[in-house]
Image 1 (cartoon, rainbow, N blue to C red):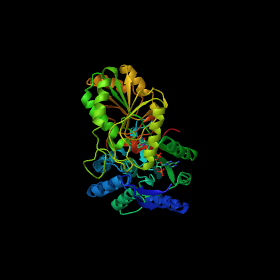
Image 2 (image 1 turned 90 degrees about the vertical axis):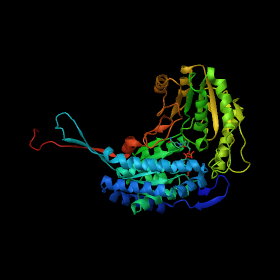
Image 3 (image 1 turned 30 degrees about the vertical axis):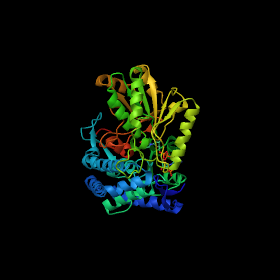
Image 4 (image 1 turned 120 degrees about the vertical axis):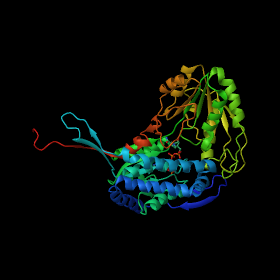
Length: 462
Ligand code: NAP
C-alpha cells in the first residue's frame, strides 16, 4: 500500500509518499498528545476562535482546496467546491453551538440539592481517525471540528489515494492555531493501528469506510478497551410510492445515485418503485441517466466524473459481471471516454430480493431498481438489506411518507429527497452500516468524558 496521488482522469502518478516508519508513528502520537495537553486547557471560546479561523482560511482558499480534491479522487470541480463549503459550514456550526453543547449541566438527583450534582464534558486525549477518500475533507472535518471543539486532538490516517488532501487538512489546523499537533497526519500502514491504539495516550478510534476495514480497526480498539465509532457502507432505499410525483422522483433519483459519481455511502443505491409507476419510472430514469456527460472533472460542463481510481473501476466491473452471471438484467446507459477511470452508468433490474446482488454495495454509477407490489412490499424490500444507513420515501402525502419512514430500519430517512448531508443534521446508521453518530451534539459527545461531580455537605449525615 503506497500513499500516492494518481489523477483518475489522466492516469498520471503525480506524487508518492513513503509509508510512516514505527518511529514516525511514535512521533505522531507524541505530537498529538503534546498538543492535547495545551489544547485541553484552552477555554472553549478560545478553541472555537481557532475553528472560526480554520473556516475563514478554508473559505478564502476554497478553489485551491477544491482542485486538490478533483486532482486526487476525480470528483467534479463543482462538487469539490460544494464539499469545501460544507466543511466551512460544519466548522461554523460548532463555532456557534459547541460552547452551549459543552456547558456543564446540573442533575436533579435524589438526596441532593439543585446544584450539587454536575455533569461536565471533559476531553479525553488523542483520537485515531481513519478516513476514506470519497469526501477527503468532509470526512476529516466531520470528526475534527467537534472533537477539537471538545478539546481532543487527532491522529489522521487518511486513505492512501488522497495524501495531499490529508496534508492540507493538517496544514489548515496548524495555520489556524499557529501550532502543530491538533490534527497530525500520518501515512500509516494498517499494522500501525496496533501501535496507535495500543498507546495509552490514544483514547478512541473514529472510523469511516468499508465493513471489513471498520471491523479490523474496531477489533484493535476493543482489544485495547477503547471506544470506536463506525461509519460504514450503505445501500439506501429510495422508495417511490404510487402517489409520488414521478418526474421529480426521477430527477432526484438520478442525482441521488450519481452525485460524487455514485461513490457515496448514502447514495440512493436501491430504487424501489411500486408496481403502478414502475414501467414509467424506469423508462424516464433511463432517459435521464443517458443525458449524463462523462469527461474532464475540471470542466464545469461535465456531469459524470471518473471513479476514484482504475482499481475502483476493476472492482465494480467484477461486481456487475457477477450480477450478470447471476441472471440480473444489466444495461449500460450512455457512453464514457476511452481513457481515464470511467465506468458507464449502468441500470440493473430483475434482482431477486435477498440475493448477493441485492445485498452488495455498488460504489459507482450503478442503479439497482426493484419493483414492489405495494407500500408494505416496498418496506419489506428496503429492510431486507444488511445495511441501515439512510433512505428516502417519495409521496405527495407527507403523513403517509412519515409513517413509512418510521418503519425503515435505518439511521436516517429523508422524504421527497435523497439522503442528505448537512452541517446541522447528524449522520450515521444501524445494522452493518455501523454505530455511533457524527455531527451536532451527538457527534461531539462520542469521545468526551461525561464526568459526574457530586457534592455532599461535609456536615451532612454519614
Ligand atoms: P476502506 O477500504 O475501508 O478505506 C477506508 C479507510 O480505511 C482508508 O483510510 C483505508 O486505508 C483504511 N483501511 C483499510 N483497511 C484497513 C485496515 N485493515 N486497517 C486500518 N485501516 C484500514 O473504504 P473504501 O472502500 O475506500 O471506501 C468506501 C467505503 O466507505 C464504502 O463502503 C462506503 O459506503 C464507506 N463510507 C461510509 C461513510 C459513512 O459515513 N457511513 C462515508 C463514506 C464512505 P487505505 O486507503 O490505505 O487502504
